[in-house]
Length: 327
Image (cartoon, rainbow, N blue to C red; front, side, top):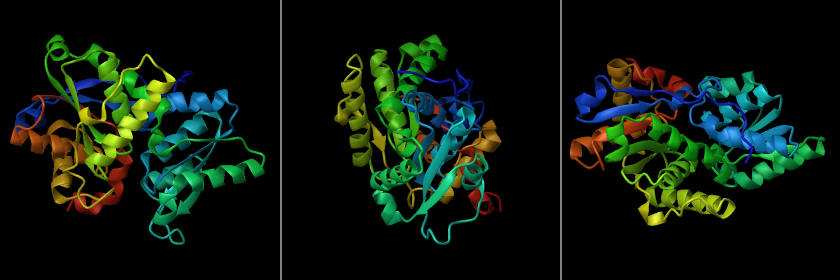
């Protein structure tokens, strides 16, 4: 499929100087928070394929959805601006008539020129239908919309992380390529996990075991979502491998109160990563995943004590938690 130049690749692979040893693991950070598109993290790899597909079809406006602090919506808005396209986003919030203050990602959506539509939680449960209605309204105004699902998580978007696994394996020390290694990531909508699962199998990388740490929903939900994306990708590109749902490892133990909500333990992990390794995690995604790595390492429950933490970004999501992070 066509692919446009949006991400700065390859991203660095950095050893953890202090946090990993303190947790009793050999830890490498795969710095996908540095893909570009104004700190858009894992979204940039997916959008390279999605935006190219939109342009190939003659679209002039991207339509997508997410929470009010969605990294994906903000990344899509900046990708659209970079490519000279319009952007319209549906943002989920408790009360659409009184949305939260313009801060962090919500501010950046507007700054990049996105047309913002706030929707309730009930409307968001019908997000495919509501995005279809928005696309129809745009067509009525003479626009040519291209709809991108939540998180950019579909078969096409997952190809970004199929390629990322080849990039990662090439950058690893030889002993890590051959021996067992845990690839940890935050599972938010399934597209990154699907690409990781497809990628390690396509490479025949038998020593790599992906583990997704759920940031919302439960393990059953993510196994089904990831397996469905992988199956769709294989239908479209038969050379890709089969990914059995039962083999997808998801840890649901660190969701906390819910999506975009955190715990004191999660906030403490963010503080530790910042102070011990100079790495900025976020409360919505990577903070939960890293707390999962730390906890399972202490329990001896990781597939391997050699761990690659796939740092998928989310820096701006930290700002709404400022009063809880720094007392």
